[in-house]
Image (cartoon, rainbow, N blue to C red; front, top):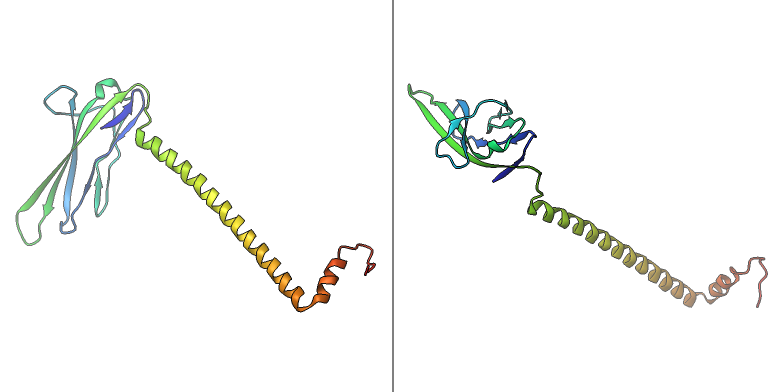
Amino acid sequence: MTEAVAGESFLLGCISCKKREEVSASTTVDWFFKPEGEDNFTQFNGRLKWEGTDSSDVQIGAIMIHNVTFNDTGTYRCTFERVLDVPHERDTEHVTINKDVELSVVAVANRELTAVISEIMMYVLIVGLQLWMIGVLIYCYKKVYAEREAYEARRAMRHPSLLRDSKDKDNCDGVHLE
């Protein structure tokens, strides 16, 4: 189920992947529309702009519906008709692929639950990563400080005179007090 907003444009997408074993082919794409509550599809004309593309592996049969109205609610059928050119044979092979898209037209865009959950998860992840980085920084600073203290203690044990010199560094006028 897809939602479009009344009065705006909407891109109806239809994708068909070509199989690797398929040979070259000519393809046509047709769109049909079955209004909500009706039984038959009709060809859909007017207010449309072709947005499809064709590559070696994927065909996109997208159409843009301009100025969507509530009457556009219903089922859209995208039909890919491929005529395969089979080498060394006189016959061609036909492949038909149908894809249905249910469209509902609303007055105001609704935020889907998945979009809201994704946004919340993104913020939780960002905050979590920032907290983790702060924790890593604190851990590293504590480790560096502890290593420095241990180094100073080992140094003082080996050279007690250095301990006295380091205490004298606090005396700004250079006078040694003993």
